[in-house]
Each structure stands twice: as C-alpha cells, then as structure tokens.
Image (cartoon, rainbow, N blue to C red; front, side, top):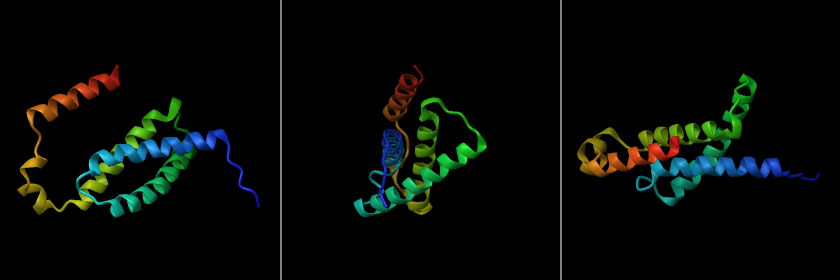
Length: 114
C-alpha cells in the first residue's frame, strides 16, 4: 500500500503543530521534555478528533485560526491545571500576575485583534 500525502495534509499538519506550540506556552517551565513529547503525541490525536468533530457539526472557520488557537489554548490550560497540584500553586509567588505580565498580555491581545 502506498501512502499519499497531499499539500492539504501537509498544511493540516502545520496547523496541528501550531496548536501544539500554543499549548507549550502554558506548559513551559512546568513540564520536562519527556512529558512534552507525550503531551504532543496526545494533543495531535486530540486535535485531529477535534477537527473531525467540528467538520461533523458543520462549523465553518475560514483559515482554521479560531480552531487552532482555541484548541491549543484550552488544551494547554487543561494540561497545566492537571500537571500542577493546587498546593504548589498557592505557595509559588511566581504564579501570580504582575504589572508587566498583565501589560504584555494586553498588548499581545491588542495586536492579535488588529
């Protein structure tokens, strides 16, 4: 049997990689390389299932940017919440927001909306 790879499948693979990189933003510093590897494998499968589910529901997303960013964001937040025990979160002062982190988050959000 031959495996046929089209340009559309390569682009979908790039989109899945983008969702993984978005998730990494919430996970860096909390996980090690081996954990990131397993999360990447699991996230790629979950992303493909999510794409199929959106297709079955008839959701239209021009360019796929909403599905990529929303899936990557929520997957990263869920994985971060699961991998970080509640007791540790309360003890770490670095987990709280600061003036500059809030400022940069706001500036980044403004640039994404423009």
